[in-house]
Length: 77
Image (tube, rainbow, N blue to C red):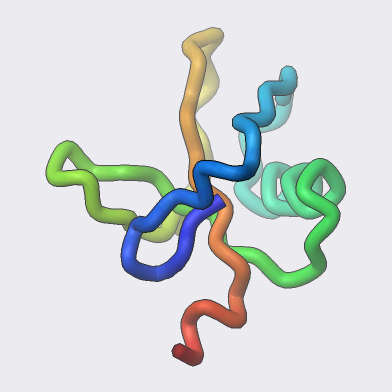
C-alpha cells in the first residue's frame, strides 16, 4: 500500500496471491477483498519509482506481477 507520493507504508506486509483472471475490474475487486478496503486505485511502479494507474487489461502470463494499492481518498489530498 502506498500514498499518492509513492510512499510505501513499511508497517504493512506485502501480500501475495494467485490471480488467474486478466480483467482489471476482477483484480481490483480481489485486491479490495485482500486489503479490506472498499475504494482503491490499482497502480504499478515505473522504473523511475513513480506510480501510474493501471487502466487496461492485464496481459495473460504466468509471470509474477507487482502492483501497488492506493486508497482513493489519497487522490483528494
